[in-house]
Image (cartoon, rainbow, N blue to C red; front, side, top):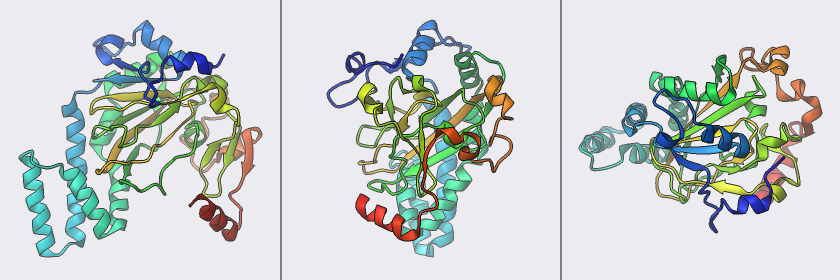
Length: 328
C-alpha cells in the first residue's frame, strides 16, 4: 500500500524538507555496516532514507582532491601562461584552506572552455577514488542487507554530476525512476552522496516517498531520450521530499523510487556521486539475462514494451524545437 498524503504530511515541513527520512548513521547500523531493523523498516516503507555521517568527510575529501586535479589539468590546457599562474596560486590557497578551489576552478573552466568541463565529467567517473567509494565494504554490506542478498553488482555507469549555478538545461528535473536507465535488476538500491554540502538553495535530490511501492510505472520516453514517469495520479498520494545534506551523508533510495533533480540556486557548482546496486538473484531479472547491465545496447522499450506509455524519440526536429520553446 502506498503512503497516503495525510501520513506523509507528518514527515514534511512547510518548506518541503523531510525530517523523517534523515537519521544518524550510528543510530541506524553497526560498525560492520549491518542495518538496524528500524533502517530496514524505514527503507521498505518510504523507499528513501538519509544516513547522516555515513562516511568520514576525509574519505570524501580525497575524492574531491582528485576532482580538483582533473579541473586544474584541463585549465592548463586552455589557459594563457598568466591565467595558468593565477589558478596555480588559487590552488595553493586552497591547500591553505583559504578558498574552495573545486568550486572556483569548475566555474573558471566552464567559462573558459565548456567542452573541457565535459571532459572532466567523463574522466571523473573513471577515477579509482570514485570507484573506491562505491565499493566501500560498509556501503556494499548495507545494500546487501537492504536487498537481502549476498549477490550484489554495481552498475556500469557510475555517475559524477556537476550542476552549475542557474543552469537547468542538463538537469533530470522530470519525475523518473532509475530502473529504466540502469535496468540490470528490478530490485536495486541507489546511493547519492555529495562532494560538497548541499543546502536547500543548492538543490538536494527530491523524492516521492512511498512511490517505489507502485513498482515499475508507465514510462514516457522523451524526445531527448530521457525517461519520465507517466502516472498522472503520482503526486496525489506521494509528496515530494527534499533533505539538505552534508559531506559524508548518503541518500539511499529504491531503484523504483520516483525522484528528480532540483535546480542549483546557490553560488557554487554542485558535485555529487551516484551509485546503483542490483540484486542479481532477482528471479525475473535473471530470466531476462540482467538486460543492459553486462550486455549494453538493449533499450528499455525492448525489454519492457508494456511499460512504455509513449515514445517520442522519433519526433521531428521542428517538433522538438517547439517543445523547447514552450518550456522556456
